[in-house]
Image 1: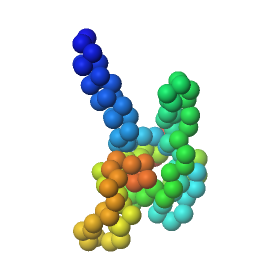
Image 2 (image 1 turned 90 degrees about the vertical axis):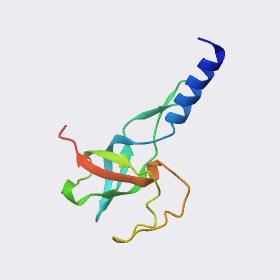
Image 3 (image 1 turned 135 degrees about the vertical axis):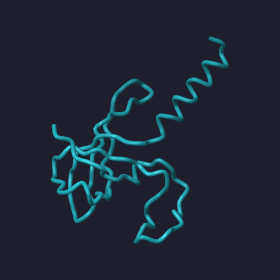
Image 4 (image 1 turned 135 degrees about the horizontal axis):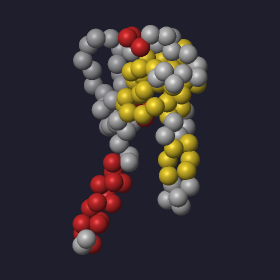
Length: 113
């Protein structure tokens, strides 16, 4: 493989690892229609060591999911844009430039494990 092919392959992988789409997580706290969650995937640092993600605060729980309890393993999607300004059924300006961030988590289901 030519050097430029290797460079672009590694660049693509590096960028891809920073884009969050979905993941399993453990529920740490539930309050109303939101929950604090702990993503279960670990992150590999440059030195090769594995570390856990920090808690994600205020993940939205979709209505169809039903009851979510502390300790449940849930499946979480991360939205394309920021959810901070979501208030009702009206269109809104996301107000932030972040995309595919863990801060914009939505619980879409509960695993039966």
